[in-house]
Image (cartoon, rainbow, N blue to C red; front, side, top):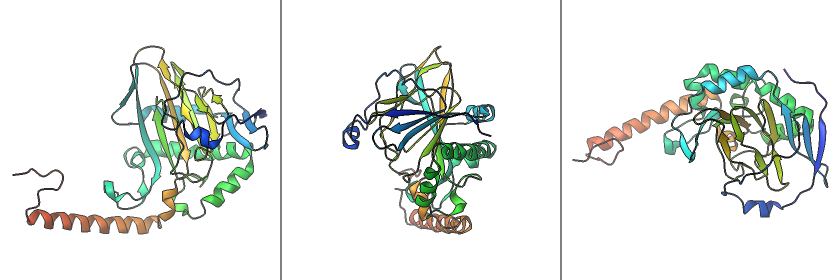
Length: 292
C-alpha cells in the first residue's frame, strides 16, 4: 500500500565536493537542526536537476513497527552516556569463510525470526513503489546494476534489494555504504520518545528530519551520510529504529540457492574433517581447545 499524495520539489545547491565530503568519513555527526522539509518531498540538485533524495510517508506503519520492536539485535554497543545502539542484518548474506559462513544464504534474522523477516520483505514492494514515484529511472538503473545477482538472492516480490540492516537507536558516524551496488536504498524509520537522530548529507548540507513513520531514499553508496546525536526524552525509554534496504555487491558471486546449500554442506564436512585430523595430531591451536 502506498500514499498517493502529491510530491513536493526541493532544489538544493551542492556545497561540498565528493572529495571534501570524504574527509568527514569516520567523524561523528554534530548536532544539526533539520532542513525544513515534510514527508512527500523529493530533493533535486539545483544545478543538474538530478534527484538526490526522497523523503516520503510510510504507509501502514503498524506491522513494520511491531516487527522492528520484536527483533533481537543481540548485545548492545555503548555509543553515548544515555543510550546504546544495536543492529541486525536481514535478507541475504554472501559467503564469508573467515567467520565459517561457507555459502550464500539467508541472514540470521530470517533463520532466527522468520515471521519478522517475512514482514520486512513484505514492505519491499511498497518501498520500490515509492522509488518509482521519485523517478522510475532509478529502478531501471538499479535493475541494470544488479543484473548479475540471481533472483534467489533478491528480497520479496519487488526483487530489487538483496539485504538490509536494522539499526536500533544508533548514532552512526559519517560513512558511505561502500559494499553496495550503486543502487538507491530505502530507509523506513519508526521512533518514539527520542530527539535528534536526523540524517545529514554534507555534500548538500541537507539534514533529513527522519520523523516517525517516514521512508528516506538515497544512494548511500555515493553520498556520505551520518546520523546526528540521539537523545531519549526519558532515561532508558524511547527508540529510533531504522531498517535500511540495499543491494549488496557480494551477492553477485552467489550461485543458485540449491547449489549454495550443497556447497555449504560440503565445505562444512571438509572443515570438520580437517579439524578432527588436526586434533588427532595434537594441534591445540584450534579455538575452544584447552592448552595442556
